[in-house]
Length: 200
Image (cartoon, rainbow, N blue to C red):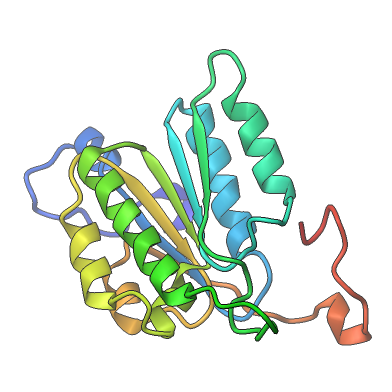
């Protein structure tokens, strides 16, 4: 798509304006850093456009205070800005076994998906970030086929971006926009831990 020009024009009877207003389903996947960061960048654009935003985080703990959450919530509370709702599903990094915990992460992820389905049906938001959602699909907590069919049938012009490694082939096939983040080099390769302002 050089210089923003499309390579083909489908014979679908739609005008350029109508095509420009179609809902977008995006997937950010791959082993590289930046999948969620890119999704939140899109959310900033959505906020600027006045679209209500729903963020659903699937493996990041409700105890964590991340920069994107603080920034988007602050923006959502400002005069004239679009509202931002933030939902955290589960305890976070659920593949780590914690002694003395009995939370059912699979059930929490399934309920999170049911809430998203209800919100899509009600057109609650115009822009959805399903952060780290690919893990819930990979681990079988949420059915990939149900996700693909639900997103294909969502009403209105609700935009959805899903992030996380190991995106299912059916998800990639169904998406309008797929970006794979490839790691070339990372500070952790040199033994450096994540830091505030960069990782959260």
